[in-house]
Image 1 (cartoon, rainbow, N blue to C red):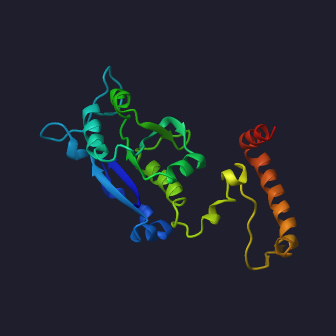
Image 2 (image 1 turned 60 degrees about the vertical axis):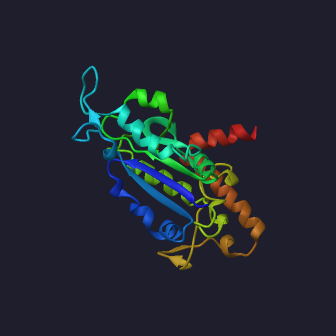
Image 3 (image 1 turned 30 degrees about the vertical axis):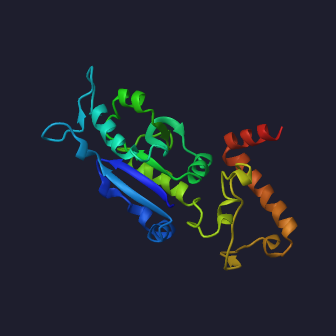
Amino acid sequence: MSFAAHIISAYPDMFPGPLGESLHGRALADGLWRIETHDLRNFGAGKHKNIDDTPAGGGPGMVLRADVAAAALDSVTTGHDDLPVILPSPRGVPFGQTLAHEWAQGDGLIFLCNRFEGVDERFIAARQPLEVSLGDYVLAGGELAAMVMLEATLRLVPGVMGKLESGTDESFSPANDGLLEYPQFTRPQSFEGRDIPDLVTSGDHEKLAAWRRAQAETLTQSRRPDLWADFVKRKK
């Protein structure tokens, strides 16, 4: 059974977008994963199929209606109630590689893509989606956030990258202790006076592994002191 991505959005034509290209696109064509879009406007209220309204108590912008969001989600979860429901939101838990690994081991995901000023809080209380944030910034909607989370997750689904080893030593990988990835090199041997370090092409795999590990630790300590602090804490 292939990994299923369900997207609930007011702009379903945005998908698959970049996910239809390169490795993800080939995996989609090969049936390693599939995507189904669900138009929020099909569940709109009244003859004009309204999906939003003004904020209760006043304020700028518009709010996605709870009844519309619930009807759309319920139509998808029927028969798929085992899939995690994700609500991209700047106030959600931070998205990271650990979560991507967890999701990739499942059968799929359901994304409800927010718009406007967000969704009525009563929908969140009633359906309890997992709110997930890409970072400390705000997007116009949840579609791009869903694409990013899906790309990070799908590349870890068996067969999508070809060799799963491709993801073992990269940045944030559990196999790499959550450190940043070591420097990579390829041809030509010399570029603008800079040569590939001799050790990298020496054939001494033991010394190369030690060098890569030292580089990963140095990069993490200098660029991401937060990750380095977590690493040191885990090693105590």
